[in-house]
Image (cartoon, rainbow, N blue to C red):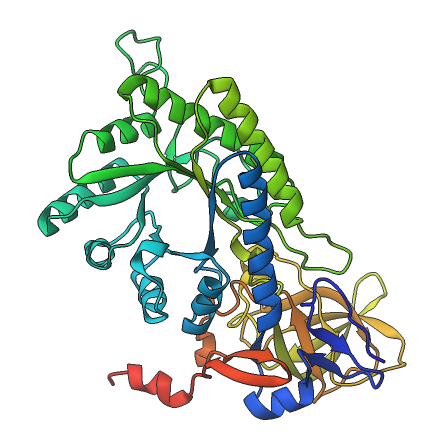
Length: 460
């Protein structure tokens, strides 16, 4: 008999009677023997199931209020050729935020029309490539970018499909650095009108968002697809989406009243939260879909405008829970604390180079010894990496078996998002492979870097 540990582990994770963990039918010892450690391990079936769940939930909820919706996979969370193909095969489109991410999506065979290009500082080369391959939407992020996209489109003799990213003033998310809709930040254009900018010095003028929308409407090189908003990341309360959607739909109605242009699409972002620790509960796709669909339907009815087509971006919610990082334990060191307790420092063969989030903004993770059973009493532990940095912490606090020792296999769940995509070569460590597991078989999607790879970049 085997046991599924539940969130934050992927649904293909099982712990056998002998204590050994399997991922999608493959034991961690076999996995480590095949690909080594550390390694990013993706449960392909779990990824696909989460992608389908979001697409189905939102299509069903929005169809019930009389409109359609597209679901965009967040390339920034993790993008490989295979992962992009999985997303498309499950009916998702793909968001990219750089020329590199765009190149991977195109290599995966994603049609340009099903790709979006984000970014607050897109290069001329990125914009030109996006127009060359016919991306479905370029999300403009500033007034000056409108000039640049128009110039690039004019040079190519095409009309560029654009959305204007706006900030609604709604602030949501797990950390200041990942809450992306309050006014004092680099993304988007505020829908709040600045005071004293009108003809009457005490009256508000047009907001930056309205100024941008009016600018796009009057340019023949640009086609205004719609309005885009994104209120943050790792969000576990749907209320913020409803408030932000109301603000965006009101802006859409205001633009129509002034210009006669009622944009066809509204992107209400996403950034849905996942469980990182045992006992945490992720957002339910069906619940959030029904709540948001009901809210936008009510707002549109009050405004007297038909509903647009919508798009949403679940963010890490699809790939985050589908992944884990597998490590081998090295040094184990008990350290006496000032309060009389002992904390056991458990060092693994990776660290902040493969998961920067704990060091960057205190992100919390869980860890377990996965290669064997243990009846030893649990001890207070901190999982740390092998880098020359005191902040090189993988898991700040976790209870591990008191007999944890060198050679043990240890896994950290919920690392499918942002582990590989934010990885570095700090201390010239090589980045781990990305490995997909399905039906008891492992397949390397991105190979492990080698020292030869590092040296090949060094021109001496």
